[in-house]
Length: 270
Image 1: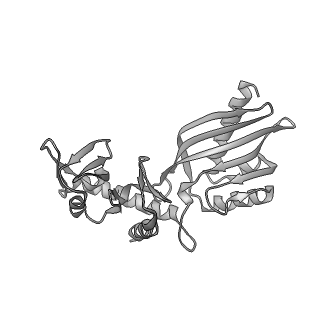
Image 2: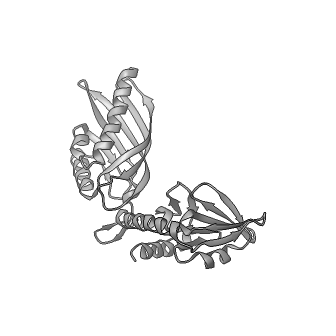
Image 3: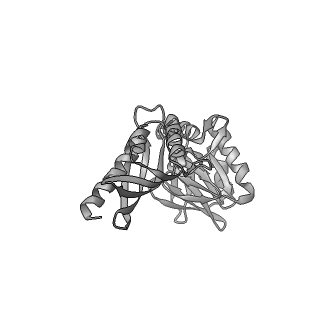
C-alpha cells in the first residue's frame, strides 16, 4: 500500500475505535471481512466466524458506557501490498455524561486487506482491562472500578481540606505531612520503606512498611510482603499483578492472588 492509503487506514482504525467506544458497533461491523477473526480479552471473546464476531460486538456494546480516547499512538506494523497491520495504544476515559469516572490504557491490533477496492478487517484484537473481571452474576469489574474511582475523587477532595495527614520522616530528617490520596504505593527497603506519590515524588521513610500501614488506615492494602497499595489508585488486577492508574505494576503472590482480589472487591463494594 502507498503512504496515503496507509494513513487513511490508520485513521480509519482510530475512527473504528472511537465509534466502538461511543456504543456504535455497526460502524466497525460494516468493515468486517466475511472471514474475520476477532479476539478480545475475555475468555469467551474468540470468534472465528463473521456471525460470532458480529454478535459479540453487539453484546459488548450493550454493556459499554460512552467513552472517548486520548494519548493515541498508532503504528503500521506490516505493509504487505494489499494488506497491512495497524497496532496502537491509547487511554479510554468515560465521558462526562457518565455517572462515574473510569480510565484505562488499552492496546489494539487491526489487520486490514483491500478487497474489491474496499478496506476490510481480517483480524481485530482490542484489549479491554475495563471489563476483564466479573464480581458477581451479571456484574462487571468495570462497574466496581467506576464506583471506586468515584470514591477516589471524593476522597481526593476531602483530603485536601482534611487535617488528617500521614506523618513520615525521611532519611534527611525532613518531616512530610501527606494526605492519603497523595500516596500511590509503598515499597519495603530493608527496615525502612519508599513512598511513591501521585506527583512523582519518592520519599524514603525512616520506618518499616508495617509501621506505615498502621498509620495509613483501611484504604491501603498489603498485597505483597514488600508492597502496600492505595486501593483508591487501583485500575485493575490481573494474575499476578495489580495495575495502578499511573501505570505502576505491583506484584501479587500466586498463593494469595484469590484472597487479595476478593478483599479488594469487598472494599469496592462497601
